[in-house]
Length: 290
Image 1 (cartoon, rainbow, N blue to C red):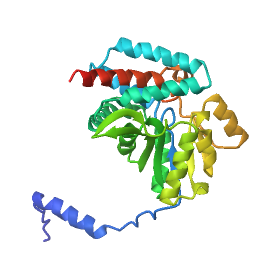
Image 2: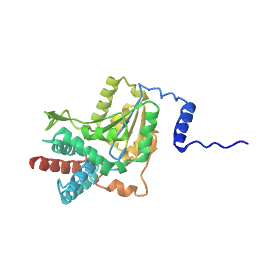
Image 3: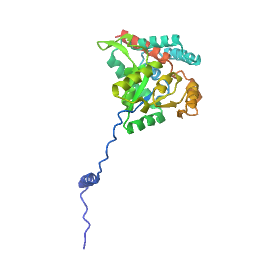
Image 4: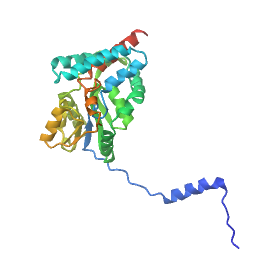
């Protein structure tokens, strides 16, 4: 008579492991596509709202400035948005904002705060649809870069958290690991984004006709027009009309709250003036108090 022989319980995991190893089939890695890349704007394209404003909110929760300060600057940003097109005065204010944001701060401190605040405030504001588009490029073996007016250190944190290749952002001058309060060049905004992409393409050997760019704003038309494939994400009215005229794909990941979201002061502007000023004040107060 046959008897059922039961294996000892402690041997079952080992047996399962052996069986899985024997059945394993190697999957060939994706062949890198070295001449193609994707470039994503951040504010309202990859992330709902302005990254610098979210950073400022994170600083507020740490007591580095008051919520009334944040509200005051948020109202200013709302007015900025309602006035429409940006002009040189707006850009000048945005430049001063970028300087205030980092002046006197240590690089390591800004990066650390950026990592903490991304996890607390920004992670849940990533548009899932845009993130999926970025992942599709990665899965195809292409590099994916963020391109934003946000200070490059914060932009790198966002790229790292999303598993992307890297980030192009506004570069601030440093000395001995401390920001001097001057920019290297200017804000990475409008035509400057296109120049950054063009310079990166030369460095990396990219064929721009095979590259793709994504943005929500007509301010990024220089970058969108530089590549072979342009996509409008959650577009403003001017970009939507331009995309329709040139038969660019349009993707809108906003919900029924779209009109509300578009009017919120966290929406992107030239360097997200309100959030940047608030963050700059907070950091300066913080470091003066040390």
